[in-house]
Length: 257
Ligand code: URA
Image (tube, rainbow, N blue to C red; front, side, top):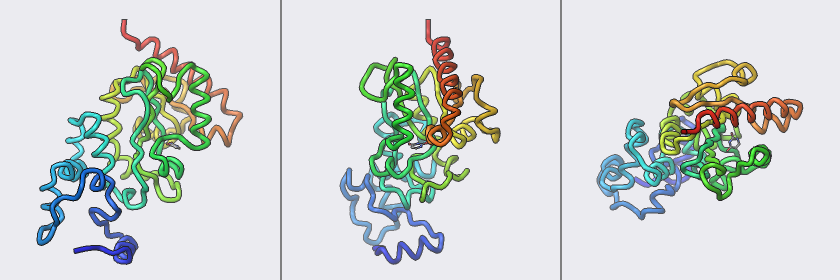
């Protein structure tokens, strides 16, 4: 059956999720699977090798733990595990050096990130870049010691930039965990309440969690304010600087040899 836009809109309104409600970027990238004709969606998907991976990933988070970079990227692009897939222009996977010593984890893509497919490209991204530059780090081309890897806790933009929901964070976390496993950073800098609370399984405010070393997936993690918060509250930039200094010290201690 083919779904036209009115049917999709009605079903969305009723809270019914279609497996493939949007033009599918993976389908475009790999070409169409054999026509579904009389078959169910699951069967048609399973018969296409690349789409089959995507479908399993949506339902089986443990599969994610086995993926290398290219397959992980494809799995994120095709993910339909939560309703955020319905409103996204594209997924926002991550950017930077795949062996970076530093990993920066933000919350969720905003409008600019959803358009450009890269994390932290709006105003808060400019502030983040300036903060990183102050400690001789960059998202631009450089070796793993100087070029960071940047990702978000969720890979799709929540509609209207609303706060991510617990279920969305939970569904997306296997992707972030796999990114951490592949990058193997020496330090994670977690920015903003939703990233911090979701990674640390805590409901404490950022102000109470910052200033000490936590761990995520065995990696030392430093908590700091989200750049968007700092733009609204510039008086807290000094605290964010302290957080960066703590992260520098912690990364140095974590360095092998
Ligand atoms: N805020 C985030 O937390 N992440 C982004 O990518 C952009 C804004």
